[in-house]
Length: 303
Image (spheres, helix red, strand yellow):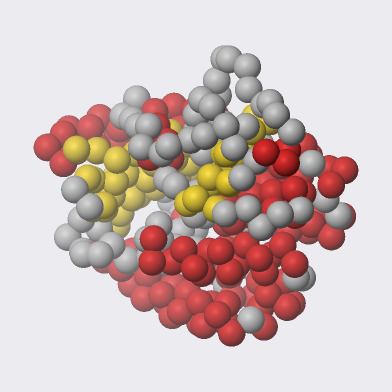
């Protein structure tokens, strides 16, 4: 690898962990590096032109990059690379570890909160009332992968890089986004109740008849359907059918490696959560297969 001064771009994903990764990398390298926002499937299918000047964070590895940081179990590789990979609560935590000498302790709380949010280690009050917890609420403002939101993502990167959470929460753009999230969360509860059914311990949220699919508190479904040990969320995404699966963080009895299951269908993720995108003509068959695996591996005595 060449000197760090040769690095000229960050490639990361638009979620809270990716936002914090970008903030830490800009701070550690001391430069306002441009950020290219990408989705995992873009990397998996080689749609991103990666150069030797790129850092990839919170996304699958791609040859030619200068540094790579990731924590998703399905993205592990068996060849040499520069950077740091480990199954961990967040990619941001690995970046902090790698650049420890270049990052102030003032980022400790930000990384601790990112670990907590990305690994879904929330208690019931945090699930039901995210507006009481600034980091959780801010994380929910990054709710879509739309390129129309790139200016907001970049703005949040710089706020988290340069300011404490109290200052972040006073920013007019952040305040507006947080008000929107609180409103969306209220409506989202209604959508979840209307479009979710529980089948042998699996809650299935099917938003395919809604365009666009509603956004909201991704943890709420676990408190609304506490008898379920895992949730499968299905919705349309452009010309594909998207599937997200997550272990319940209230009824913690799911035994299936979700990332491994979804990797069989072109996706991936963590042991407890992940996503994939399916061709619509194959979606029903593959969704049925995944659902059956979840049911077949249900706990004997769910809480």
